[in-house]
Every structure is written in C-alpha cells, then in structure tokens.
Length: 401
Image: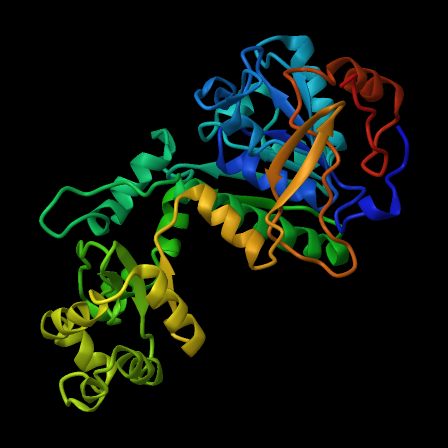
C-alpha cells in the first residue's frame, strides 16, 4: 500500500485500531480516530454490523445509518466462535495500538481477547471498552441500548410537554456522548503511553456518560437537592429561552443575560419591560415567566419569523428559526462551516458530514468510503501472516474496492 500523502498525514497516522465494536457508540468513536489518520480495521461477524440492516433510508441499497459512521475503515469478517478466526482476531489485537470493543462485559474474554490476557503480550495496548451499565454486578449483566439509557438516566423525564409523556431525544444522544468520551479517554491514554510506554484499559458506560451529559440537571440533584422535571421547550434557569409564536410560525428567542434582554425589549418596542422590577434580572424573569411570556408574545406576533430573525440578528440578539435537518446543513454551508465532504467511488459521489474538528497543521482526512462487508479480509489476513509483530507502524494493505 502506498504511504499516505502529506495531506493525509493526520495526528494519529501510524496507529492501528482493532475495532471490535458495532452499532453506534464504538463505530462513531473509531470513525473519528480514523478521520484523524489512524488505520481502523473493523472486525465484523459473518452477519455484519447490525446497522447494515437498519433501513430505510438507503444509498444504493446500503443503510445510510451504517454509511454515516463507518468511513476510513477496512472490514474483515471473523467468526469468533471459530478457532481459526479467533487466532486471526488475537493476532490483530496483539499488533494493535488501540482495541475498541462493546461486547457484553466479560463476553469477549471467552475468545482469548480480554484485556488482562492481551496486555501481557502487548503491554502498549490501549484497550477501550464500552458497556451499558459498567462492569460490576449487577450492571454487567444488563444489555445497554440508547433508548434504555435515555429512560433510565432521567432524560425522558425532562423531554416533552409538562403534562404529557416523556419522549426520547431525536437522536441516540448518549451513544454519541459515550463515543466522544471514549475517544477522549483513548487520546489521554495515548499521551500517557508516550512517557510510560504502557497502555491501559479505558472504560466508558452509557449510563455514566448520560449522567455526565445531563450536566446542569444532575448538578441540580446532587448540589441543589432539586429533581428537574419536564418543561417542554423551556429552560429551568433562563428566560426568555424558548420558541415564541410569530405571525407565521415560531422563532427561538434567547436573552441569556440582562444586556441581551435590554436589546430585545428595545427591538420589540417595549423598553419599559427591561426596567420593570419583575423582569430586570434573569432570576426575576425566570420566576415571572408566566407574566412576561404573554407580553413578549404579543409583540412577536406582529411580524413574521423571518422579519424578526433579521432584526434580532442585526442587533446581536440570539434567535433561530426551527429548521429541518436539510435546512440545518444548508445553513451551515451559508455561514461558511463547510459541513460536508465528498468521497468518490468511481463516478459515484458520496456527500458525508465532515469531521467537526479543525486542526491547522494536521487536519482530518477522508481516505476510504465505508467498507463493504469483509472486503479487505484476504489482504488483512495476508498482512497478518507475512508481517512480523509488532507492526503498528506498518499499515495493512486494503482489499479491492
């Protein structure tokens, strides 16, 4: 395989990641590492990653869910119940700088792929595990899916109308949060390895990540003795911080400090509200939202969302239309974020969401489309047999694409 070009030499170039994870949290984390230059070998069962079957929507018959989190990877199919494939998996893990897995706690040890066993022979290995509820009993016996965590962490008690049922977030938010936490833990362990020469076991659970990600709400419980509750689109500590009705729809309007509220009242033509003792400070506005809300709504109902958006934006008042996902991508393009990148497969173009990290010297790169199931298997097996260990600085060849 040709050496990476200068443009493709990301900060993690030369590192080999053995990716034994599936579905979302682990594959998302490894994709981010791959964007930063690491070589990712995705190990799949004969039936493939579950997300390959999560359809619709599809692109050329392939699940867009799978495509969205598996670029910059190579795929090998290994049946870990087969002794020969177990040996291949073990050989891969012993050459890796990083191994990522999200098996049920303890399950992967049955295949000779546990941390204790591998780290004895590969002491520099950074072994990263994701679980639903941790590795201690009884949590280690529980399967973890994002919807379960949204329910059990308390997020669903915060999401929805005050008098209605709890709702899940529109995305698998805690899978994403856990993947980000895992990536950060891996990078911390890599930094430590530079001085110690040794890897370590990085562990992340979905529930712990959820409680961390609930930030002000969990702090309200542990520090304030207050149990948060559903408030619809309202914020428990800020007002206004809501969607408000306009003459043709709704607009998010935010006044996160007293200065912004002063500006807001001036544009609305009711500057006296900023001087009113009931509304002059955020804590008072929040306490008196039931009184202030109708006063603001009455003024906002006199113009369209677009008219207010232009006026507020020009005055530096935070506001936002409620967009669809395609409109959100289009907005990012308009403001100069370059949110997508195009990968090519012959004449076919795939527009994908760009890695959100910007690095001035070693930017992310986009070298491989998400792999077909097992497409690199023969090349990876040949590389494992022909290259002496350790070989983390030598990239395995890719299969035919």
